[in-house]
Length: 349
View 1: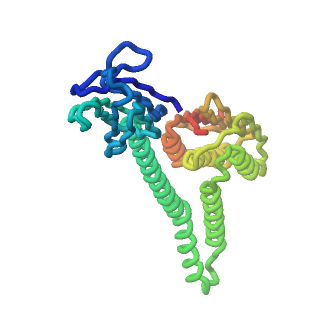
View 2: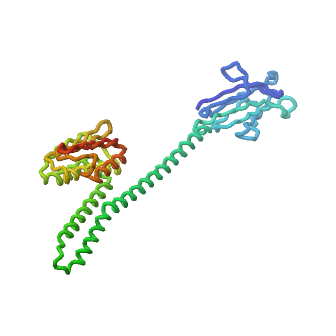
């Protein structure tokens, strides 16, 4: 422990300045760091004719408020001083045997450590308050995310499943009402019921796949893209050419971006299966500095993009979903020259 040592004289005068050790300057106060919490004070009267007969007493106000009599020994030591301000008093008794009202005093200050300073408490309060606010905002954000997810699932179930269920209900009622009519051909109704049921299964499959967080990894997205295009186009005699950037396996895509991207892809493949009547389809997906570039092209009969008859609402939906991705989509097609769709958007790791 570091020690601060001070020497000062004692007299009947009201105040005698303190001479600090190793300096020629006079001072009335000693300031120490919090590590220097041990101090030894040496004091002596300036009346050298009575040395050895002078008695002293002292006290350190703020540490102990009672006088300590130490006879003729002019030394006081204090240890483990807390960070605070103290005043050391010492009178001398050497004239008439009584203690005089005048005494020498020394102010002693022990500086607080940095972790007890006001600016540290202010900084700590600011950090804690900021963290609490960040956690609160994160909780609000997570709540909003869950709310959006629930609304989206409800909307998907209504739009993609609800209409198909309504169709099945209508056709089933017609088939039931006509069950006793021997001249009624119910095969078209049964086919529509079967088609609607198949659409429901596909829609439910897509919804479940989309909300599963394990599918955020692009490797699973690519696997589903392969599965869908081969199931739909291979049976129609298409030669399928796939080119996926190997860096995509290290990328994750958020649920909403994954959903919009996959539905654009699915709509494009479905349009090829329904309308293109071609022989080849080329599917390319590249990554350039976190920007995705998706291209799907066929050598089918193409169509007039101005009329937008082929693809119909599908083209509108693709443009809507591209906007939701904060990306851009370009659809190029001419009769007899096939169709090319290029989608670009910024992904997320």
